[in-house]
Image 1 (tube, rainbow, N blue to C red):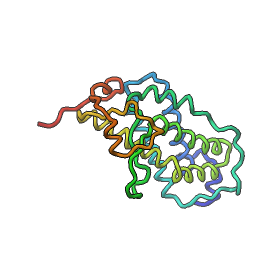
Image 2: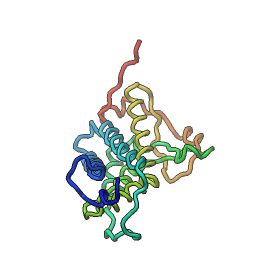
Image 3: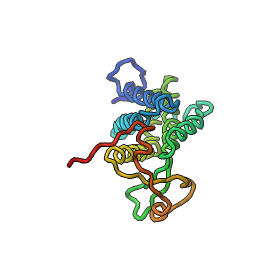
Length: 222
């Protein structure tokens, strides 16, 4: 794809920039709708779907050749979008399964899992994507694509991937009728090793959260 193509905002649904921006905007809108809490029964499955679809856009950005911005310095976008309210709404909606354990880099040996929050992750991803979307809406298509590609590698790609793993694990635990570990009281600012995480965790049965979060157990095959 040539720079001239990237620099032109079109209405062509087959255009790479249009497709990426549509997927990103759809994700942002969807996460904000979920955070309103109007349909808590479908929150987790819907987030699983939306994060999965977003990572398809991320994969396309990652596989694309390096995108170079038009200008050496990024144009000023003004104040960054505040996502604190989104973060708080998601934390309230996802309690008590907001906290999960994450390994930041699977290729770094002997790195212990650390506690993370789905609500923090989703809010951070929305902030990253919104930054690029502001460029796109201002007509700076190449700048937007560069930012989305760069931040995919540096931040939101790994963050969304970890969130997807947590959401998929949660759905799998419930659908397979397997008990979940209780991470209530686990401070995400603590640097806990894997053994400490296990000691800290208690037991919360899947059925305690299945109803409020729109999940259903399945019976094992006899």
